[in-house]
Length: 173
Length: 358
Image (tube, rainbow over all chains, first blue to last red; front, side, top):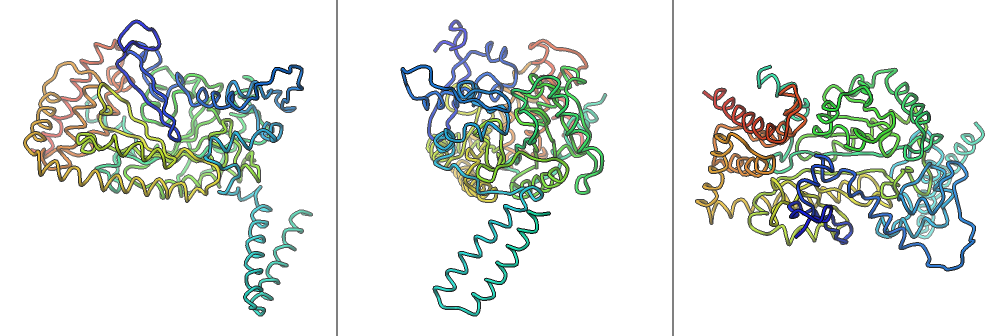
């Protein structure tokens, strides 16, 4: 097999990357691997972004109608088209700017998930943390009422009120 | 400089410690990707903007000591010589990307070199925690504490729905990449990996190995990490990986036992042949060295070779990389010179071990 980089020498490094069952193979000769830096694999030669940008291109509708207003991020100026090429965002605000297009992309990359379910930052996420806590208590409250455990439910209701008060104070403060 | 001195200075302190299941899991790594709210991501940031980001982060994180790990030392990529960068890459403390392509890149290191915080890599901040052996849970805990400490000082780009915002959509959410480096020679020899690895991929985990000719990965070393960062909690992500790694450890152990049972002679031959080559060769390429070291390490783990410490594979895998060889030599080396130096270093290292045992 010939090296896919130079097409001259015999490929001696075979590198396969499998992401969610999709296999991409690279076959290159040692010389080209060395030129790519001693760090192969994991260097920049075959990055996840190139693979990802393949996914994103796939995402673009094959529309012949030109002159469609191209969305771009007002903060960093990155256009959606640019994003599909490099596979990376320009700033945090890009997530807002391209919000409407994001769900399908994220679902594809993260096996159907599109919303965060992990850690919340302590300081700036305090309000969200309270909100999550309140919501989980409310579900609990509902099941207590269903089970006609009214005494416990009353206690829980007071607890929720307290938390909501805290949350409002946080907002004002 | 004596070899002993070079080794003790070259290896990160954490590498010399023992970890759980370290006969199979060489190291565990946790990485958290974070960005600052008001700054453009490194991809689009200009030189000036990158400088401002690095300055802001550097100042916020070096002003006071972090009680758990002590003070952090900040190293600027632009201040380093080419080989110094290379050595940090070979130690896995910085990425090749940070070394070669970053604008005003920097790294903050603790004295154990177990924690490294990269600045201006693909994301503004990448917290990395490296531990010996199999201790992902521990790593996550340490990384989380550092993350909390940083969050008190800097305002992260965080969105309620999407989580921690990262430059690449493959990292968004938790920003967490958990990985282990595993040595799986017996599973490779018995051709079982061909069956196991595709199954692992189906679980949303990624397996990386460097493939030489044939199907055996170079040195039988595999890195296994999570692919998903969104939609699951950090604990669940780590737990899922942990479960699979535990399975692999068990399978590797039983494959080793059955190899000893059924093909002891062939195994002994392979192990001792490799040892002979390492102990006597005058020139050796890194590929061959890695494979021979893997065999010797297996021999040590199975008690076929006595009087050698099991750490030798991890240690020599790191020390025989080009950057370290050049650092030891104190000059730039051609590939052939490196092969010669590599052989010498391995021979001397093995001799050192004999001497300490006498």
